[in-house]
Length: 163
Image 1 (cartoon, helix red, strand yellow):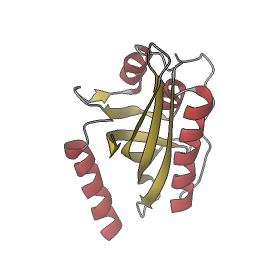
Image 2: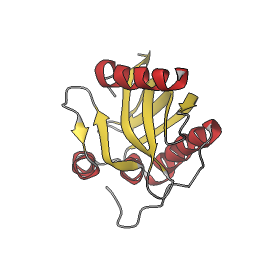
Image 3: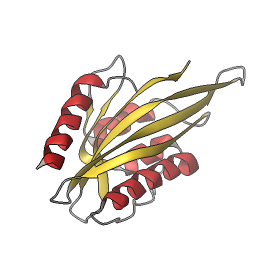
């Protein structure tokens, strides 16, 4: 009961408080990772690994549930994988690298929903080639799809670990 309450609280906080944070035709599939806390952490790590290796655009589309939502600064929520794909495809990820590391995770007793949170590092190059580094925190709410794969249903992050 406490985990369900805590999961609900995190979801509400994510919806209310967190507001800042070139696809290929063949996307790698997320791994089927089971229904344990460690499995959700592993899914989050694999999500980050795909972002690092194939680009953040590819990863954020591959791991999105059909009804996923992204919360971004200065923007209404972006709801639905197709809308996320359109939003993400407006910006090239060629000159950027996004990686993150989960700090913690909790999973619902049912084993079908979970959340992770942690820290991220975004490295981008400006027009002069200068490296710009941004660090922050994130939260991801996960749900199992019909095949048992963990997909995010809500993701948000905020800048602010370092200027």
